[in-house]
Length: 441
Image (cartoon, rainbow, N blue to C red; front, side):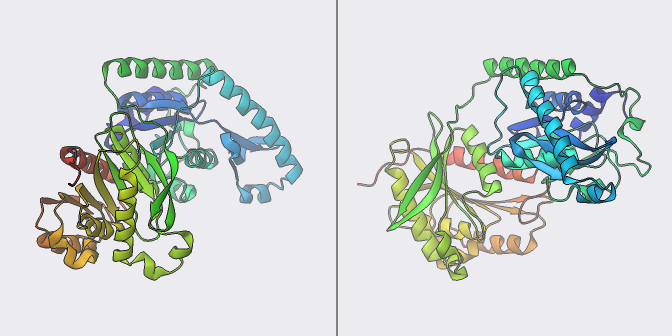
């Protein structure tokens, strides 16, 4: 046995999630047993708590054996192997699903008591259960979070079979579990007290979390971040799709230049953008190329073309009512970093700061010595080739600059806590350098 009860399991699990503390995290508990575990995690991280409503689809006459799961938003995960082995017909599956969906909807009304679900857009979502057995419920929960706009998903459980990571596939960006025993037969064997959690305990956990968050908000000043709005960014004759978010009283606004194969929907850039929004900075995520242009790979690596688009978008942004007079910064990823540095050298650019994440500043070539904007280069410690390219590029910069190496990170910053570190570095660099820039005469 590893845990006294679910609360004890939650406290132990929270110790493995300390790298998320301080980030704007949402913790989702899977009813019912996962909610007391999640409540402890949410309290330790200072995070919002909500439920992820998922119902297991049990095999007829053997309901403890899951053949799939359903969740809010119409998400449905089916285990085809179990269906085949147990000879479950489509009619039997439909009957079980209809029954479980009715329960799911009823519990949604009961658990939240009329409150709206916590928003996920651009945030890190930690999905928590009291353990993983088959994994079908956890997979459905992760898919629900993804469908609702989560930028990053962490699946965290106190105990799971030793091969649980293979069962979960790619549904979560990070998997956390302190105990993965070989002799796993059932979740309950690892708890001294595995008394079933009832609905009243779930409601009590959620209400306590709401009260705690309300109390915290009364004592901590926070920026109000409005909903992002879809915009058509004018770049010469082109109209490029974008998403603009400007908090009230914003100190500046950051344009994101995406790398090759990415877009304004990039979950990593959206994650960073959400962190900047919480710090009182506006963000514009937009596509530097149209869908048709992206089919020609030469466009993706045409730094001059991408830089012109970014410069045109900057002019358009400065003409918007909510961003007029604000300092402007660039955040570039991969090849987008080269475009950001190139565009920052254009006459009259007046760029307050540039941040590169896993960037290719070398592609800016002879423009590097002309950059005057303070520049931060962020590279993963295990991204050896790109790290060397950034060191060489840094030696050619004449502006204020810094090379920040994130230990243990690879090129995409997929490792636990590394993207959070990128966000913190970018936030601090921009807020330190975002002074209002006077208009040129």
